[in-house]
Amino acid sequence: MKTSTRFSYMNLSPRTVRGLFVAMLVGLWGSLLMKFGMAAERPVLLISFGVLVLIGIGAAGVLFLSSLSFIAHAPEGQIDERELAERNRAYFDTVRLIGLVILLAGLVTSFGEWVGLRVTLPIMENFLMRLFLTTIVAPAGFLAWRQKSIEENAE
Image 1 (spheres, helix red, strand yellow):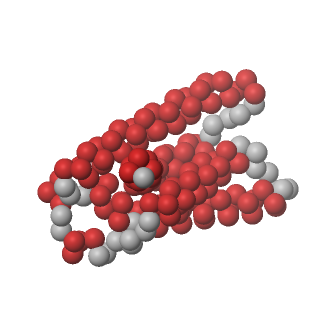
Image 2 (spheres, helix red, strand yellow):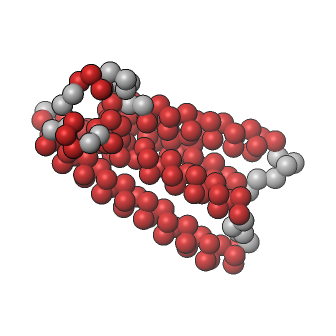
C-alpha cells in the first residue's frame, strides 16, 4: 500500500465516518422528502430544508475526502487483499442500498398519485443528484460500519 497517496486524504476515525454517513443520508434524503410538503408560506420548512441540504452535501464532501474513501476508490494495486475484500463487500452493500432506493422511488412514483404526490422534473433532478452523491460516498460509509463490527469481534 502506498502511504504517500493517503496523505492527501483526511484521516478520520471509523466512528466519525459513520456519523458523517448518517448525517449525509438524513440530510440529503430528508430534504428530498421535505420537498413534497414545501410551500412558500411556510418559511420554517424552507429554512430547515436548506439546513438539511447543507448538512447532507457538507457531510458528503468531508466523507469523500476521508481515508476510508481512498480505500473505497483505490486501484487494486494500492490496497492489500484484506482491504480489497472489504471494499468489494462495501460495493455490494452500496448496490443493494441504491437498488432499495430506486425500488422505493418507483413505488412512490406509482402509488403516490393516489395520495396526491406528484413527481415533477425538478424533484426527479434532485433525486438523481442525491442518488449520485450517495453512490459515490456510500462505500466509505459501509467500510466504516464493517470496521466497527471487526473491532467489536476482536475485543
